[in-house]
Image: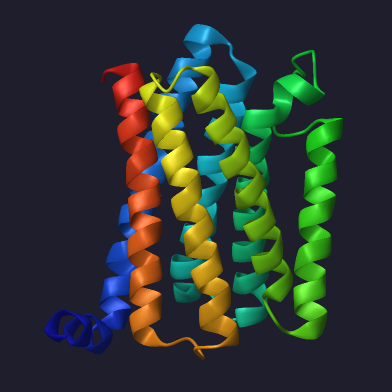
Length: 220
């Protein structure tokens, strides 16, 4: 298809534009979620906010640090760490009420989140030792599978009427499919460019859905 050919021929420019868009969307979501948290002091919202803060850091590290350092073994582990932690924060934003009955002073540095940091570091080290991203993919697929189930359960509890719960569920399913495609692209398709373009598209829809949901909730 001509559009795929054009994207592949200009993939470096497309990657930069794609990263700028994702980082900007993450910045907007983080800012709006932070404002919503300041109004409601709902812990789930601040963990949700943290997720997109880490997503923004991850994409910025992956696509812009290379202009400062070309060291793949520095950039890739940072990218993986931020993405894995973002996934953990998204999952925890759905689970925190069932696990933690009180609101810790910090949502970035507390005992329970420290466990996620440790798990993320272990996943990255395993990928680094074996020089494959399979542990990250496996972790993300599991995280988004559980997040999809929990978000659907929450949507069902709201009698299928809460719009943000619906967006959350749809976004989680899209995220799950995107990570499955990522794993398939790495294992079976040798990073086929057309498959990667579809993954980027799914990722963009994932972030846009959350931005739309947050804008609808905040009405700003």
